[in-house]
Image (spheres, helix red, strand yellow):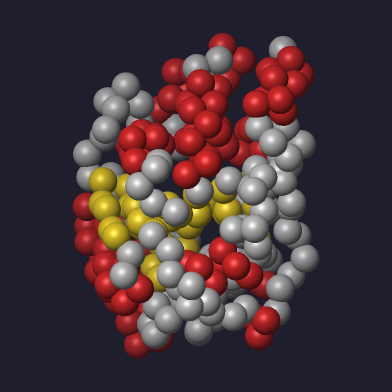
Length: 246
């Protein structure tokens, strides 16, 4: 059944370049090219969101990006995480790029614009690519703590919404879980499709702790995903980071 499902998936979605080679930070240059960009955060943890939102707003203010925080579901039939897809589909033609940021991610270098990632990894030039995510720190396929999406990702988002309803994916479980689980399922079973670009550690996203030492955050990195299990510890870490945020 899964084979039949993803033969169809391969037809619906076009093919992508998987970026696996490490990229030296020295080669990571900023871009002055303006683009209409919106940062979107979705949270079910008000205290955690309050700790990180100030950095998101300050980042958007510096670069002239719009910012939207969702604290209530746009579709009550699914977990709050799915609301980002609803929002994207409703607003897909209003922006050149959407940047979805989890509430446990802190932007630590506000000098780097989103367009730096877009151009450095040729995300703008590669029309097949629709979504940009980072290599996972724990050996997983990727981490979507920061996800950059083009308006052309709308058909893929619709497909992910539908995939979660398939009997093979146990809809009651998947619909209450993060949409990222369905995105990973699609990526793994469709053979690393070309519409998803996975960029190296410590470019788009770094990690507080990681199995791979190359993924661990260093001062000057763009963003840190907090990995402490408790919300209280993650909030404390945000405060500890203050002296190192550029």
